[in-house]
Length: 436
Image 1 (tube, rainbow, N blue to C red):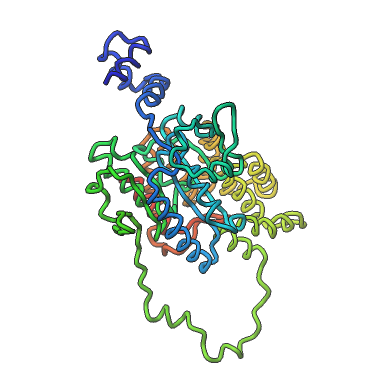
Image 2: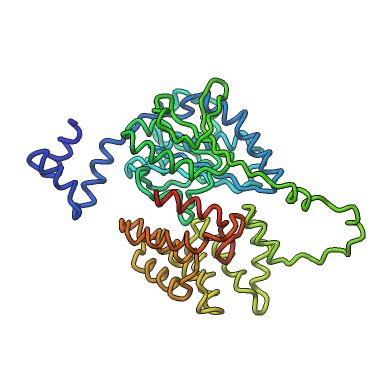
């Protein structure tokens, strides 16, 4: 309370009531919110905090997850540090990956770190820390992954490059989000965050975290979190005395499905398969997260005479997913030169403008996409996301319900949208979570 009173006085309010009224106003100055948030959400943390959890990640979770993905032909790894504070936790994750995955260059790693505190994120992006942050860090790790800066140590660039930092309020409805990349996480760390919320907010956040995990994904909490309030959808797992949470979805295949998957006895008499379409190969590579391999096919295809418009769209989506929005936009422009009425092009332009805070343009492109094809699932979804981020729950709900109506009779495994596409089951889960 002393911090709140002090911040109110610093902002020029003579008493707490006036400060409260200003914070509660629909027309409040966003600076007031950020100033107070930065003051009350500073978390104490350090590298390799909770050694037993890092041992679990290093010795059990990572090897099993990577083995499973290799068997599936999927080289994409998605990890989220939710409530990352000043960055020690996500950088510890990055170091753990570098230490534990010898063929890391073969994997598509997306390590997202979010926090509501803008000042903490600034510290995290710089990656410069004092000695107290290293009180649990082995000396050899410090030597390998940090460099001296004045009297402090900075995380080396090879580690910083692994982590993507972004602002996010866990109480908001901005996740799961396909457009922001907050979905299908293999591992979520949300430690010492839930203790700051009331029971209803904890349940809300818990449900969203569940929806953001991929099936088989793992959620790790801090030791003091109110675990009794966690969503009943989670399956509790006891790992070396630690309670972990996992998302399990049982997909029972019918006998007929199993039978159809068997190779018939006369298969050897079948004619040889036709050469695989390179565009279909590229789409399959994108779907499995092998984006560099996909680009190796797509870029030469793009230089042919009259390439399929999907080639341009896939390349644009890959670059947008990597945060290379200028490059992505160049490829969208090439697509629009070929097809001025391509709905996915305008949808992707809207996503790019949203990511770069060009809100007016984001709405313009999204509206154009819906106008061109009112039955486009992804165009309606993008409109919903924009209204949700703008705080217009009514209009967001309208477009989310349109999405559910459009996909209600489609099988979960069907993909919607051009380019990479999005599985209907994933879309349905995301929208249902956002409408709760």
